[in-house]
Length: 432
Image (cartoon, rainbow, N blue to C red):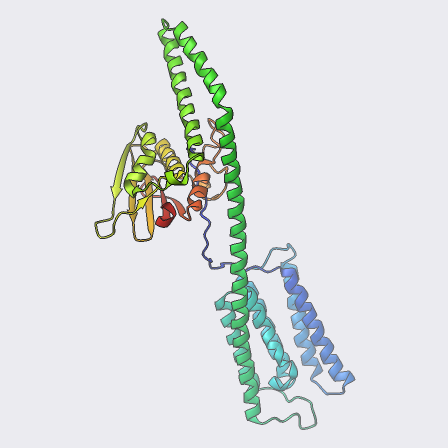
């Protein structure tokens, strides 16, 4: 479990969306529908209903929209999704193009002025706050201009005359509707995005937990199945030692082999004992620093580098008492063993706490985490030594899973001028 690998922490906080994406084919298809509807409406009103419209300018504005749509179709022929700024520009063009049509056909008195709300709704659903506010401002400016400047609606020879107060009411209604719908749709969309993110994170956590359970079952099975073969190997090694006791070279190798066999038996017995621990045994509490030192004492005794223990808290906050849970024990052993493999002279274990959390930071003065490893956080087989001497990149992946079982978090980073740092945060109540 000593691979220089880094798992990602399942962050349950909502992150700011840097690039809202939308399929350009959907955008183009919606605009073709809108342009077709605009052209059909203009032709129907002019020829079928008999209202005299400035047909040339209206058709010219619609044709400009078609040209822009054809241009966007050409740019998006590769099918690459649009990021936030292009989507905002496209929606802004839709608002301005609709404003041009309404200027030629009665301004806000035209019933189709309600379509100003459509781009605002789309923006609130897929874009961020700044983009939506920008679009509402554009709609407000266009509506304000159309309230004062527009060609008359061809209702009669004199046009449709509405009192200024009524026109002002239309402007107020449109602006308030745009603001309200933008806020309401954005709120619903953000809730939906958060729910989707939490659901995705929950699925990842459940998948990770299933992997840990599977590995734990395999470890328990290995502990039982390897017991007899190791005992046989030990008996054979004892017999060979007695036969080759006059050969100092062979005897030295056999003694090393015997020591490693005994170490394997100790590890297997620890797996068995941890699996069989009762709640009463886990209820034994001791001061946090002492408990942590006790959990890793056997491991750190074999290190060739110095272990420096630091306790930051003073006497104002009492030291919490915790149990020696297997999850925390395995996690700390994996982190320390990993650090010892890369440290040059020293490993620092910094322990602090407050009324709620226990903080454990383990730092070494080694080479730090390679960039490719940091770039692939959260992968079980993410290690700079993958495949070397049996390393499988699972050590720190299990660290993340063990700490998460205690409702804690882990963070991994490089420190200056050199070395790696692992910080563990665990609620005290999860350790009692």
